Length: 380
Image (cartoon, rainbow, N blue to C red):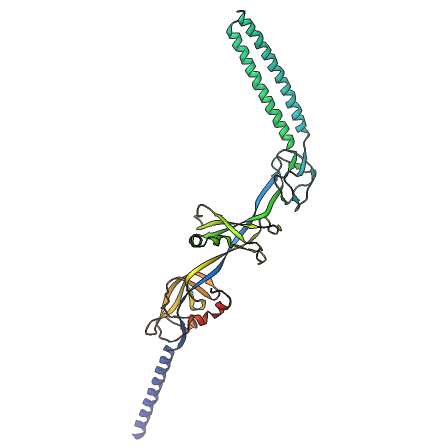
């Protein structure tokens, strides 16, 4: 009997000890320590890059305006030509024949006009002598007017034939770089055939699209800082910066409904002709932020394309909170909405956090976290 009571007593002690241990572990788990910080407001300037298409200020296709054979090519691809310089000649013997026919037709109509004018003069004398009626006079006048119209038409035909002949000599409309020449000497050329194109790229345009929100931010910033539009950088396809700063000249007058974007155009100097028509790159704008609220990127997580953080209330209880971000800095986000400087957020170990659990916060000043930003001049 004594042994039975002893066994029961020991079992109860072991069970009590086990429950006490489980409760202690549970309590320790619920009050696990986590580093906590609060958002801070800073003044900063961030670069924002936009994919850009580079176009020459002038880029014109040179097309044949008459049919014929490509008789001679006077230039080569990639070479610089001056305005008015001869590029191609096209051989079409029919054009000279057309001029000869037009000139002969003009002479014939001039002869007819002279005959009609002489006839009108004679009819006037006869009318004055009452030999013929005024009706004959009107008919003679009409013949003169008709002959004059034929002369004008013949003159126009001759002028057109001569102009067509000038099209056999293709000249540069402006100074620039010759691009690809698809046809070779002797090729049959039709009216409208592409002969080459010329680019004037001592200056270039960079076209890039900006969202409506970013456009409004830019416009508001421009009111406060007129120099903002001058401080535009072009990043080349190889990642290098173009040595000359650009300037935003204009924006389109409407927002593209299908994308919600608006097109910008910036102009860049290109004295070394490094930038080519059709090249690609990125336009970098500098955006200034006043009292921007920042938090560490590693304090955030996404659920179904929405961003959240864990905040701690006064009783150290964890709550999930949605936020919206404005821009990304190195290791940090600029917050648009959802947080205030008084909020306390968990910034490390969030993978071990569950909504509603209680933690022991270890507060760390944001300035300590952002030392790397200061060192890299990301915070100004």
